[in-house]
Image (cartoon, rainbow, N blue to C red; front, side, top):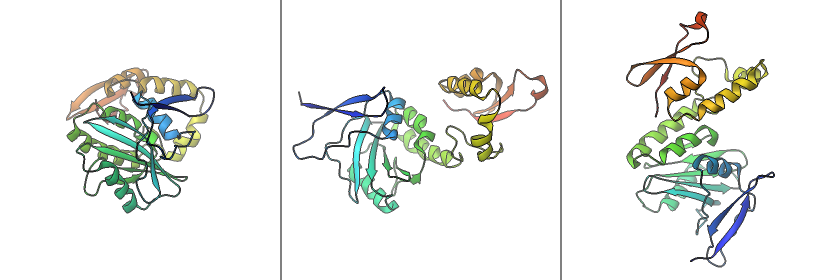
Length: 246
């Protein structure tokens, strides 16, 4: 059995710890307090990260933790002192992939942004995203066929880019993103609505989430759902159309 090294990360009283295989003598130790992205993904995957045996990905990019769900997906978190150029990010992705057939998502954190690279392609997509917008998609991808991972995650990146900085929402035809972020949380009853939304978000399918939010819905064909508020007769015809996703 290999020796193990216990490394703390996170903050506050509820600090988690993960156990990772010890690397070769002389390898660089990762920083003690791991990043918010690692915390977020540990929660999403319900699994502690592993420590890479080789951390240097070139151009000042250093891998700090990863999750492997072979053969479906590998997710790697890396850090850089400054945002790397897209070309450097792609080379770091290729270094980590090392010609393996697995879909790979590389998340490169810097002080000002997080670059998401992958999961496939020549070159792979490189996008600047808030990882909170795609953590659920990454968690769901663990159960997908690798071909579906390569198809669905780039589409998830595009949806997140249209979210206006709103976690879990693509703002199309609603109020402005500023109103939803700054004004709506000041409305009476917002805390109760937020709690209901968090509970609904745990539904495994879109119909389940709509049920939890109190909507009636029916399938309109081609995977579209038409939803109506069941609690307000005057808004009965205010329908919401959404793409059903499992």
